[in-house]
View: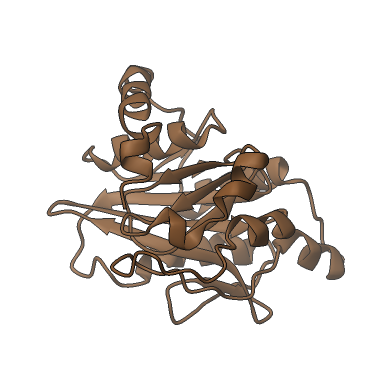
Length: 241
Protein backbone atom coordinates (compact mmCIF):
# COMPACT_ATOMS: atom_id res chain seq x y z
CA UNK A 1 0.00 0.00 0.00
CA UNK A 2 1.60 3.26 -1.14
CA UNK A 3 0.77 6.13 1.21
CA UNK A 4 0.58 9.49 -0.55
CA UNK A 5 -0.05 12.95 0.93
CA UNK A 6 -1.23 15.57 -1.52
CA UNK A 7 0.91 18.68 -1.96
CA UNK A 8 -2.20 20.76 -2.63
CA UNK A 9 -5.30 22.04 -0.82
CA UNK A 10 -7.12 22.87 -4.08
CA UNK A 11 -10.29 20.72 -4.12
CA UNK A 12 -10.40 20.28 -7.90
CA UNK A 13 -6.76 19.13 -7.91
CA UNK A 14 -7.30 16.55 -5.17
CA UNK A 15 -10.41 15.11 -6.80
CA UNK A 16 -8.53 14.88 -10.08
CA UNK A 17 -5.64 13.18 -8.28
CA UNK A 18 -8.05 10.66 -6.76
CA UNK A 19 -9.43 9.81 -10.19
CA UNK A 20 -5.92 9.55 -11.62
CA UNK A 21 -4.89 7.07 -8.91
CA UNK A 22 -8.15 5.16 -9.37
CA UNK A 23 -7.19 4.51 -12.99
CA UNK A 24 -3.85 2.96 -12.03
CA UNK A 25 -3.21 -0.66 -11.03
CA UNK A 26 -1.51 -0.18 -7.67
CA UNK A 27 -2.85 0.15 -4.12
CA UNK A 28 -2.86 3.66 -2.65
CA UNK A 29 -3.86 5.33 0.61
CA UNK A 30 -4.24 9.00 -0.36
CA UNK A 31 -4.48 11.78 2.25
CA UNK A 32 -5.37 15.41 1.58
CA UNK A 33 -6.93 18.55 2.99
CA UNK A 34 -9.05 20.97 0.98
CA UNK A 35 -9.74 24.67 1.03
CA UNK A 36 -13.38 25.48 1.94
CA UNK A 37 -15.60 23.64 -0.51
CA UNK A 38 -18.71 21.51 -0.87
CA UNK A 39 -18.17 18.13 -2.48
CA UNK A 40 -21.36 16.54 -3.79
CA UNK A 41 -22.05 12.94 -4.79
CA UNK A 42 -22.08 11.87 -8.41
CA UNK A 43 -25.88 11.52 -8.51
CA UNK A 44 -26.81 14.59 -6.48
CA UNK A 45 -28.33 17.90 -7.54
CA UNK A 46 -26.60 21.04 -6.28
CA UNK A 47 -29.93 22.90 -5.93
CA UNK A 48 -31.21 20.19 -3.57
CA UNK A 49 -28.17 20.10 -1.29
CA UNK A 50 -26.35 23.43 -1.18
CA UNK A 51 -27.07 27.02 -0.20
CA UNK A 52 -25.49 28.39 -3.36
CA UNK A 53 -25.91 32.06 -2.43
CA UNK A 54 -24.10 31.55 0.88
CA UNK A 55 -21.33 29.58 -0.82
CA UNK A 56 -20.85 32.26 -3.49
CA UNK A 57 -20.73 34.98 -0.83
CA UNK A 58 -18.07 33.06 1.11
CA UNK A 59 -16.07 31.90 -1.94
CA UNK A 60 -16.78 28.23 -1.34
CA UNK A 61 -16.36 26.05 -4.41
CA UNK A 62 -18.94 23.39 -5.27
CA UNK A 63 -17.44 20.31 -6.94
CA UNK A 64 -18.85 16.94 -7.95
CA UNK A 65 -16.94 13.73 -7.21
CA UNK A 66 -17.15 10.41 -9.06
CA UNK A 67 -18.43 8.43 -6.05
CA UNK A 68 -21.99 8.26 -4.78
CA UNK A 69 -23.24 9.26 -1.35
CA UNK A 70 -24.19 12.63 0.10
CA UNK A 71 -22.84 16.17 0.08
CA UNK A 72 -19.99 17.02 2.46
CA UNK A 73 -18.26 20.22 3.52
CA UNK A 74 -14.47 20.42 3.42
CA UNK A 75 -12.08 22.95 4.89
CA UNK A 76 -8.53 22.79 6.20
CA UNK A 77 -9.85 21.56 9.54
CA UNK A 78 -10.73 18.13 8.20
CA UNK A 79 -8.64 15.27 6.88
CA UNK A 80 -9.76 13.42 3.78
CA UNK A 81 -8.67 9.85 3.14
CA UNK A 82 -8.98 7.65 0.05
CA UNK A 83 -8.25 3.97 -0.41
CA UNK A 84 -7.77 2.87 -4.00
CA UNK A 85 -6.95 -0.69 -5.04
CA UNK A 86 -7.90 -3.60 -7.29
CA UNK A 87 -11.40 -4.99 -6.91
CA UNK A 88 -11.98 -7.44 -4.06
CA UNK A 89 -14.61 -10.14 -3.56
CA UNK A 90 -16.73 -7.76 -1.44
CA UNK A 91 -16.30 -4.30 -2.97
CA UNK A 92 -19.26 -2.69 -1.20
CA UNK A 93 -18.52 -4.00 2.29
CA UNK A 94 -17.21 -1.78 5.06
CA UNK A 95 -13.88 -3.60 5.31
CA UNK A 96 -12.03 -0.62 3.85
CA UNK A 97 -12.61 1.19 7.16
CA UNK A 98 -10.58 -1.32 9.17
CA UNK A 99 -7.19 0.43 8.68
CA UNK A 100 -8.78 3.84 9.34
CA UNK A 101 -10.25 2.63 12.63
CA UNK A 102 -6.98 0.94 13.59
CA UNK A 103 -5.00 4.14 13.00
CA UNK A 104 -7.51 6.29 14.89
CA UNK A 105 -7.43 3.93 17.84
CA UNK A 106 -3.63 4.06 17.81
CA UNK A 107 -4.02 7.85 18.12
CA UNK A 108 -6.31 7.49 21.19
CA UNK A 109 -9.50 8.04 19.18
CA UNK A 110 -11.90 5.12 19.83
CA UNK A 111 -13.88 5.42 16.59
CA UNK A 112 -16.58 2.88 15.75
CA UNK A 113 -18.09 1.91 12.41
CA UNK A 114 -21.77 2.81 12.00
CA UNK A 115 -24.55 1.19 10.01
CA UNK A 116 -23.95 3.37 6.94
CA UNK A 117 -20.21 2.64 6.71
CA UNK A 118 -19.52 5.86 8.61
CA UNK A 119 -17.41 6.53 11.71
CA UNK A 120 -18.73 7.60 15.10
CA UNK A 121 -17.12 8.91 18.27
CA UNK A 122 -19.04 9.18 21.54
CA UNK A 123 -22.37 8.90 19.73
CA UNK A 124 -21.67 11.53 17.08
CA UNK A 125 -20.51 11.18 13.49
CA UNK A 126 -16.91 12.07 12.66
CA UNK A 127 -16.72 10.67 9.12
CA UNK A 128 -19.04 9.82 6.28
CA UNK A 129 -17.84 7.67 3.41
CA UNK A 130 -18.60 7.04 -0.25
CA UNK A 131 -17.44 4.53 -2.84
CA UNK A 132 -16.95 4.12 -6.57
CA UNK A 133 -16.41 0.68 -8.08
CA UNK A 134 -15.46 -0.25 -11.65
CA UNK A 135 -14.92 -3.63 -13.24
CA UNK A 136 -11.31 -3.70 -12.01
CA UNK A 137 -10.92 -1.11 -9.24
CA UNK A 138 -12.36 0.22 -5.99
CA UNK A 139 -12.31 3.74 -4.55
CA UNK A 140 -13.44 4.34 -0.98
CA UNK A 141 -13.06 7.70 0.68
CA UNK A 142 -14.21 9.72 3.65
CA UNK A 143 -13.93 13.01 5.47
CA UNK A 144 -12.64 13.06 9.06
CA UNK A 145 -14.00 16.00 11.03
CA UNK A 146 -11.00 17.06 13.08
CA UNK A 147 -11.26 20.83 13.60
CA UNK A 148 -13.83 21.78 10.96
CA UNK A 149 -15.91 24.96 11.07
CA UNK A 150 -19.20 23.23 11.90
CA UNK A 151 -21.14 26.48 11.59
CA UNK A 152 -19.95 26.91 8.01
CA UNK A 153 -20.75 23.25 7.34
CA UNK A 154 -24.35 23.72 8.45
CA UNK A 155 -24.81 26.91 6.43
CA UNK A 156 -23.22 25.57 3.25
CA UNK A 157 -25.30 22.39 3.30
CA UNK A 158 -28.57 24.14 4.11
CA UNK A 159 -30.70 24.12 0.97
CA UNK A 160 -33.94 24.59 2.90
CA UNK A 161 -35.01 20.94 2.51
CA UNK A 162 -35.72 21.51 -1.17
CA UNK A 163 -36.13 18.57 -3.52
CA UNK A 164 -36.45 20.41 -6.80
CA UNK A 165 -34.88 17.52 -8.70
CA UNK A 166 -36.50 14.39 -7.32
CA UNK A 167 -34.46 11.85 -9.28
CA UNK A 168 -31.28 13.01 -7.53
CA UNK A 169 -29.80 11.21 -4.53
CA UNK A 170 -30.57 12.94 -1.23
CA UNK A 171 -28.07 13.38 1.59
CA UNK A 172 -28.79 11.74 4.96
CA UNK A 173 -27.82 14.27 7.66
CA UNK A 174 -26.37 13.07 10.98
CA UNK A 175 -25.16 14.93 14.08
CA UNK A 176 -21.47 15.62 13.55
CA UNK A 177 -18.63 16.47 15.91
CA UNK A 178 -14.94 17.31 15.71
CA UNK A 179 -12.17 15.04 16.97
CA UNK A 180 -9.91 17.78 18.33
CA UNK A 181 -12.22 18.88 21.20
CA UNK A 182 -12.68 15.22 22.17
CA UNK A 183 -8.91 14.81 22.53
CA UNK A 184 -8.68 18.00 24.58
CA UNK A 185 -11.51 16.89 26.89
CA UNK A 186 -9.73 13.57 27.48
CA UNK A 187 -6.49 15.34 28.35
CA UNK A 188 -4.74 13.97 25.27
CA UNK A 189 -2.57 15.90 22.85
CA UNK A 190 -4.82 17.86 20.47
CA UNK A 191 -2.58 19.29 17.73
CA UNK A 192 -3.69 21.40 14.79
CA UNK A 193 -5.00 19.60 11.71
CA UNK A 194 -1.74 19.82 9.80
CA UNK A 195 0.11 18.07 12.63
CA UNK A 196 -2.73 15.57 12.97
CA UNK A 197 -2.30 14.70 9.30
CA UNK A 198 1.40 14.03 9.93
CA UNK A 199 0.57 11.81 12.91
CA UNK A 200 -2.11 9.98 10.95
CA UNK A 201 0.31 9.36 8.08
CA UNK A 202 3.01 8.12 10.49
CA UNK A 203 0.54 5.69 12.08
CA UNK A 204 -0.46 4.48 8.60
CA UNK A 205 3.17 3.75 7.79
CA UNK A 206 3.41 1.63 10.91
CA UNK A 207 0.10 -0.11 10.20
CA UNK A 208 1.13 -1.09 6.67
CA UNK A 209 4.82 -1.64 7.54
CA UNK A 210 5.81 0.95 4.95
CA UNK A 211 8.99 3.02 5.21
CA UNK A 212 7.94 6.45 3.98
CA UNK A 213 5.18 8.65 2.65
CA UNK A 214 5.35 8.90 -1.12
CA UNK A 215 4.78 12.04 -3.23
CA UNK A 216 2.46 11.97 -6.20
CA UNK A 217 4.50 10.64 -9.12
CA UNK A 218 6.18 13.54 -10.93
CA UNK A 219 4.94 12.25 -14.27
CA UNK A 220 1.34 12.33 -12.98
CA UNK A 221 1.12 16.06 -12.27
CA UNK A 222 0.57 17.16 -15.85
CA UNK A 223 -2.19 14.59 -16.37
CA UNK A 224 -3.83 15.47 -13.05
CA UNK A 225 -3.78 19.16 -13.92
CA UNK A 226 -5.31 18.43 -17.34
CA UNK A 227 -8.10 16.39 -15.71
CA UNK A 228 -8.63 19.14 -13.14
CA UNK A 229 -9.04 21.83 -15.82
CA UNK A 230 -11.13 19.78 -18.22
CA UNK A 231 -13.47 18.16 -15.68
CA UNK A 232 -13.41 19.32 -12.08
CA UNK A 233 -13.47 23.06 -12.85
CA UNK A 234 -16.23 22.75 -15.42
CA UNK A 235 -19.81 23.76 -14.71
CA UNK A 236 -20.99 21.03 -17.11
CA UNK A 237 -19.63 18.43 -14.65
CA UNK A 238 -20.18 20.10 -11.31
CA UNK A 239 -23.78 21.23 -11.98
CA UNK A 240 -24.86 18.53 -14.41
CA UNK A 241 -28.07 17.53 -12.50
